[in-house]
Length: 530
View 1 (tube, rainbow, N blue to C red):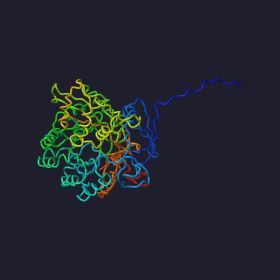
View 2: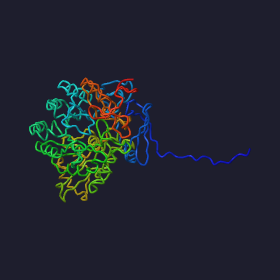
View 3: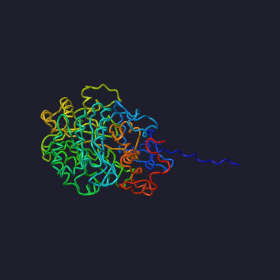
View 4: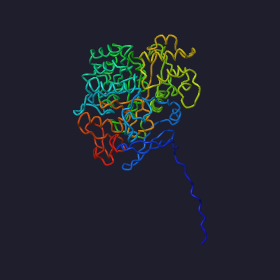
């Protein structure tokens, strides 16, 4: 029988570049599973498969070249003085901190309650007007602070959060307890409602702010439009935010405006928020956080979520007269794709023609100091040390420590006339002339990557004495575990409110989404369980 000639089958290339294998979790049952990182269409994606629930994929970085370039900015980690847990199951089941963790805590967070005077549609803490929450006691706060001091010696920053921490009846006492310990900066994370309504409270906070023991405010501030406030916070809070900021200015409190940014809601307001912050005397920095799809949030598509480079490119596009994307550099103390920062020198009066803004990275080659991979010779180790502290999760503009580091750097700069900044004059009153912009993307159950998690330097301090990486606390089930322990009420593991998961989900008592079959779904492993 004659042989029939057939053309050989043509091989086809994949439509993506494979980067690495890592570990993640199933966003539904939270079991630890293998994952891979790939580049496709100039973006970076995390893909994983759960034996029970199938395949999941999420966008983790909207600019592949920026992702690859950031890997050079990965500072060797610092070992904490003490660890709180042992390695039994491996990351992320042994938090923490366990001896396998690669970084100490630049910032420790203490959530003082689960109650809140808002019920925001977007809340990673899943807090609000619930009857089965908890509030920590003075004794618990003391223990949590002591755990932090034992691990760090002289911790950089402790942040009081919630819920809404200002409604806790002992919040001023908690601040006092932190300030009598060797903690350099205390920060209060707030929606601003009490700050706006209670001048005596604002005055009491101002009295606790001094060069030797600074107290700063981390103010929820998502935009200037009514639609933004209603979409993210459930009501129009614009006048409340204005009053809160004015009271902060009146009583000498430095403020960071913190914007949760969601695609299709308020990403068009990046430039307006920066302009507003630069014009207000209380504001020293702005922090943009792509919405963390943990806890309670609006439905989202994991493949089109906002990421850090989307924010950075958006800032450059909305304020091209001031910014380029290259003005932002990764923070080396955490995993370098998690956070980016730039610092500005300003001159003149905001809103007038003489107002000038100059990003500091245009005056000093940051790569010469913060590139830890290329083995280049560092021009000045003192400058590197100062930059390391500024490009850190612990940096707070307006504190004496940060000002000293900025003075060291700016005095070393050679600023030509074209800068548009009177540099010697700016150095004399540095606090009034320096402004920071931070971009921080926290991981969620879709995007969790243990490679990044092990370098986390923002730790949640729990009442039972653990220090859990913030993204693990929000994603793996630790938040629900602590809430159940503290309240005595069983809490089902929260599942991201992703559009593709909608048929599998039901609403929880707090407004978040949980698996429709409840907390005892087959295959579910609580943190620390085999």
